Image (cartoon, rainbow, N blue to C red):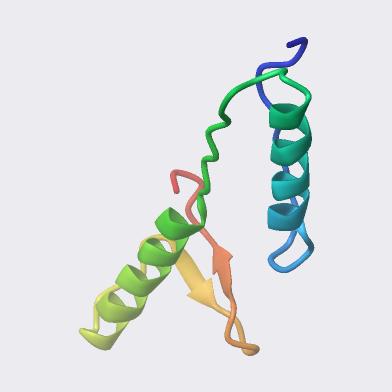
Length: 80
């Protein structure tokens, strides 16, 4: 296999998971790999956003994010 890593970047709902499933199927069916490992950063980000929400309810400062008017979040701490 020529490439060891593939990064799919994009906004939520843009089709990254669908592209991953198609790539995985093609790579496995072609015999280039037996398995693929998917690493998804969403659970880590979501946990940080929820931690910030809980901290804010306790009157504490948010650490990682700020909520947006449309119910989304902006990451404010590059360490995340």
